Length: 196
Image (cartoon, rainbow, N blue to C red; front, side, top):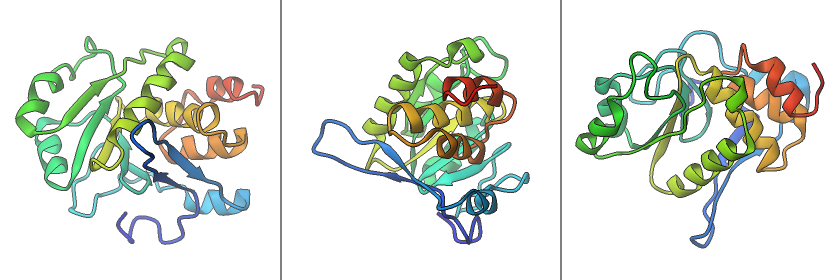
């Protein structure tokens, strides 16, 4: 992660490898709510170390970029920086997407689509698929997880942090916010057992 992005990053994600079966993005829990608030990225898009900026871009963990819909040019530039797995949470029938499946092969990257059309798709099954995909990408380069605005990416990462990684609900929610969670927060809070 580029040091200019968050010099006080306390909440981070580590891609851990295990002996071929699974590896998870594990959330390192911040000591206090105040520290987590300090690590939350600014509203301005984050740039990668090579200077690639995507809509609503955030780097909530080393080797993990979240944000809005990317372009073919951005995929190519991010691949050149070492991002080798691209996960799109938008269904293929949403405007501005559906080009990735064909283009990814030309760009030399792995592409996975996990369609999350809305809050009803925030399921254990979809989170399990995201967990498996992140595990498969471990050690293969950086990961770009995106949707239209980063909201679905943040929601899915918050749920993964709690459901798959065992992170306490409040810390999982904070991680989701750091990754782009916005409008889906009330639904995610319920799913994390935090009420409305």
